[in-house]
Each structure stands twice: as structure tokens, then as C-alpha cells.
Image (tube, rainbow, N blue to C red; front, side, top):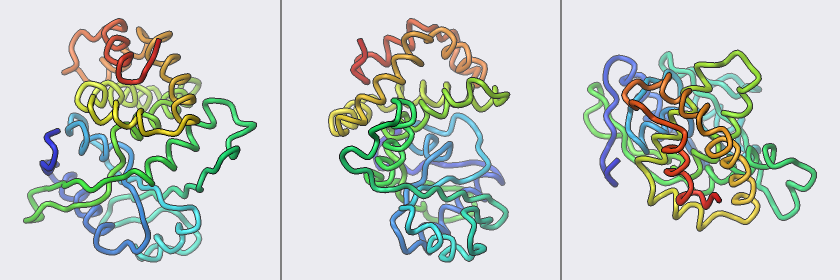
Length: 241
């Protein structure tokens, strides 16, 4: 997407999603970052529909965030005008905190913390709200770092459609946000780069054909995407060999 351009979400669903984002932007008193499908739409364009809003906050701020949104104490899920808002608490990761975790586990932890600490404001709009709503969204690099373990976690489950949409999201982020991804990789910690490289090698090189096939099944507009094309797109941006 063009930098500074507000992304328009169409239809009733777009009105509800943007309304929920507006509520977060207006009422949250703690730092947060919007992640998930709506963040992919903001960063790479709204090529697919989504029905909820996911956000990360510091693990110590979850209940305050729930209270800000007038949710029920003790939970981490709030309904805002009929839209489900999931709040995921993330901890501060210091040196050595991921020791004992494998690359996959470490990437999940590090990526979500990175999403919160590197989020930047972006605009989103709909027909029901006159002015674009500005809120903090995860960066394209953080989104890919979160999507890779999500994609792999679903490999042994029945969530085929979710896995396919993860693959398509990764493709669109690589295609539409190359500069942001390259700069994100350069700025990332050594631990995050290491864990991401391991996952990206598995998903986008070793199993590139299967990943491309799933991406095609989720988005027919992708066309005849092949594994070698996906791998060639990912290699320079994510430092893969």
C-alpha cells in the first residue's frame, strides 16, 4: 500500500471492523498493536475478508485493556459492537529468555513482542465513518514473523483454510511490502533473525511448492504462483540461502 494512504474496508463487515478499531484507538490507555488479518489488509491491501480484530498488549496490561473496552474482568476477549476483539498479552523478552525453546517456539514469542514494540500508526476507513481512523498496526516484517509459526502450527490440524490464508498473507506481504520487510530484518535482534530464518527456510524454500499451492487455494487472484517464484521472492528479503 502507498505510505500514508488509508485502507478502505467495504460493506457492513468493513463498517464493523473499522468501528472496533476506532474504539481501540479512542479508549485504550495502554500501548497496543493490531495484528492478524486486518493488519495484513492495512499493510498489503484488503485482498481477503476477516471478521475480527486481534491486538497485542503487554502481559501486565491485559486486564486494564479489557477494562478500557468495557469488557468482562478476567477475560481477554471483548465484543465491540458485535466484533470480536482478542487481546493477546506478550512479555518483554530479554537476553537468554528464549534459551531452552526451539526455533519455532522462540519465533512465536519474539515475533509478538516485536509486533508490539515496533508498531506504527496507519489509517483505515469505511463508509460509515467520515474520517479515516488511525491506530497502531504491526509492521509487515512483524506480521510475517508471526504468520510463519501460525502457518506451521496449523500443519497438523484440520484448519486447512486458515493455513491457506496464512500462506496467502505471507505471499502478499512479501510482494507488496519489500522495503519494509528488508528494513525490519535489518533492525531485528539476532535471536529474532535466527528464528525467522529457520522457519522461513522450511516454509518458503524447503516446502515452497506446498506453500504456494495453499496460497493459490486461498486467493484465486494470485494466479499460477509456483514454489520457485515464492522462494525467489522471499530469499533476498529474508536473507535466505
